[in-house]
Length: 206
Length: 206
DNA sequence: ATAAAATCATACTGTACGGTCTAGTTTGAT
DNA sequence: ATCAAACTAGACCGTACAGTATGATTTTAT
Image (cartoon, rainbow over all chains, first blue to last red; front, side, top):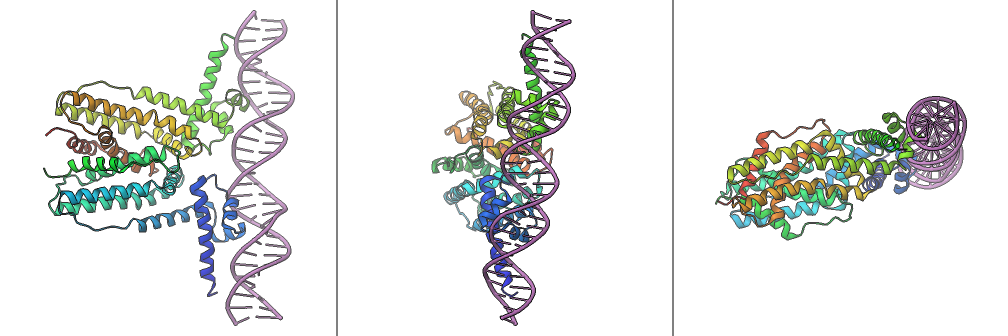
């Protein structure tokens, strides 16, 4: 039994991995338990010995993805001391956000959440409290640092954050979620820089 | 046969209406043709005499909704002559966008599109080319008018439009699509004004 | 009135799925 | 070697669904 847990965990991983692939590729409803078991190279019986049912599997797949994302998007703590440094940091951050959110896999995840949230509200809640929250924190932190350095002046913290993230999200929504191309067409660096340039005007002391 | 077409059209409407309600309420996959027929108060046979199948029905439902939206969101052609008038117009427009996009019915539609676009790309294409396009046009037009009046200065038309729409979209995404509450929590007027205030900075000649 | 078209109610077919069950096989600790 | 736990393959059950078929009933045009 000492060897049991690790092995069991490996099988569980194997199953979750297969489920994740199918869920993201074909959606929740259109992924059958048979297909998941086959993809995992595991019998259906085993599948059901690790998971009580399809929803259970969905939640677990989900938690893991979120968890991975959180690690991937770790907080970088830099303090811009002037206008140029802030702009540079913002461009970097904007590119990182786009690069992350415009991944095919990530878009599939968002599709899954949006379509299943009415049925499983916990999905949306869990997601919101991690990914967008984390991104917002990033932006807020950076701006906070700039503020204490006297680089910018900020009244309405929340609105300002939305002014930064929002325009970027338009790309995710229009080119990522409302289009079927895979990979999606991504904004080029110039477009991102334009957004940042405009954003700077909302925030910089003149 | 002179009477036939109108009556037929009425039945078709009746069916489409029922399908629309169910699709938006329960999603495409989870709405059965039996349920649609029942909801329409029509036999299944009749349903299939008007529509060749479920997908056909989806496309038609969809076209109609888009069409209605286009009419609902007709273009208003006003020309702001100074800063205050522009701000006022922008606030009005922002509120209109939020009020429209945050309708429960509209959110359900967007959910449907996002989840079915990988399977039916035409949905996303049709939607993109109407609703977001229309909204963008609205914004662009208003800014264009302000520009010719010398109220604002605009270099990067597209980016500026995204700066206006993007922040508003964050509410739609976070509170509308990632949450299950119905109706969704909507931004209050003050929040919208803050966005517009910030936006004005990106665009106004100082 | 009557015939043709439209509609209805309902049964049916074939398929797919979630989940359970059975029976045989492998694995690993002792 | 042995025994229990873990696993496999696949049959099986009940349900649900898209779509078809049938035969009776209503509507409409003439």
